[in-house]
Image (cartoon, rainbow, N blue to C red; front, side, top):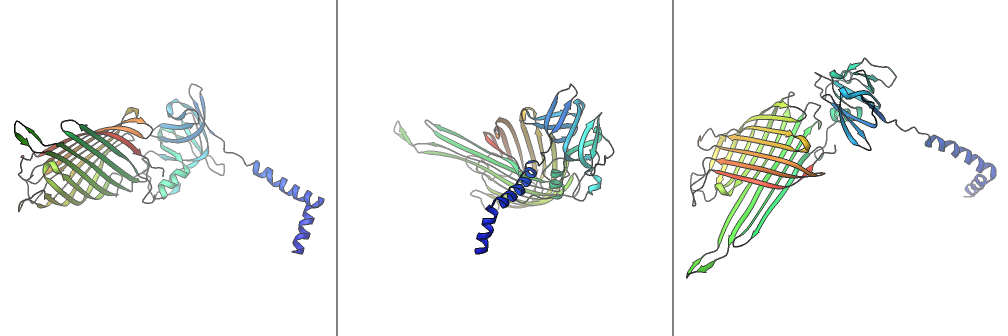
Length: 401
């Protein structure tokens, strides 16, 4: 303690204080003088110039962020000059990059573009061979490339999708209410479209429930009992895809359906098969698949022999498109035959159109058409087809991975 007090007095003495001041004064400029990264620069053919951050280039279109105007998309043909201070990676056309792609196959460095050629400068100052902009299919920053190419999101990361809810309520001679909701989630790894997928997981739910009620009444001495009409349709499914090439994948799936209108209590499907990405661009994608599956059908108030244990398949086509002005359209068509009972087949078609409203909110309109060829007899007579038209407000879920 005595030694500490003496040291403290010495530091507070004039020579000690001066020495401490000099030492800290020498450190402060070093911290304050830490250089800030220079902004990227984009010069258009008409002479306009933007400073900010180069985000990416996909399929010939450059995305550049400016703090004032936000994200700007410009084709290579309208760019006179581009300079970045961050390290970028160029994926050339014809290169299907994957987890095992060596680093040497992907040129990296700070980027400059002029006269329709990209020049990358390595950290040691060496300029790599020029790359014609026509040969650069994707240009992304080095950090993003490493995260997507070598990393893997955990179970709670990388999900995109939507959640929709809608309702109709009527109070009159008959009271009516209908509620409908849907949720669709999808995660593809890597999470970006410019790398080949390794796996994909999807989960979907769509349901509606409603009632029409009318109180009992007496007229002309005749009493009409209370009336209740119910509607309930639910669908849920999940699928896991494992890619063994850029377009082909193996899959396992399960699906559950309840349709009160078709007298279907529960239909269960467990299957496996193969899928194929028939068409894919940044704006559109078409997938087709075929499975072999076990299917169990349980009907409401079923008589002996009406419930079914089936061996069959699902043949499906799924199409998604990003339309102008932020609209999105999706469609799925399924045909489900049964091989041990040719009459026990079914089919479904779903369509959905999302119209952006505000930020992550959109208005969704859609249809769900279901056909079941073997519903049991009932009163009133059971139709084989049910059709729904749904509207609702949708919250779009976007991954931040």
